[in-house]
Length: 119
Image 1 (cartoon, rainbow, N blue to C red):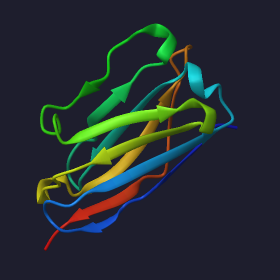
Image 2: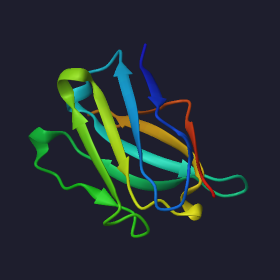
Image 3: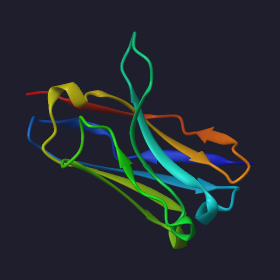
Image 4: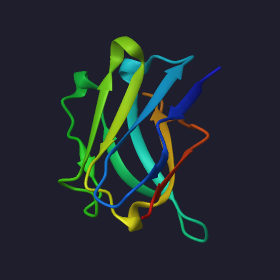
């Protein structure tokens, strides 16, 4: 059974930093494209960043709104993907979700972690 568990969310002041983690199990983590998405109430879930498997040579993608501030990374030995978020803004407030997509195109989601940027 595939399971994704996010952690690291919380309350931070504008300009601050947080690092989210997502630990995966029940899948071949190294072969999955990993992604971070976010959602605020009343809006659609939106892409934040995606990172393909190292073996594909694919490119990391970021939403324009987070380029230069957020960094996605992965540690396949730990089955974990990270999202380092710097220079946080109030508009970054959302529930952040981890997604794993396997080579067959099946996608799985974590339960989400709340990030609140407020003074």
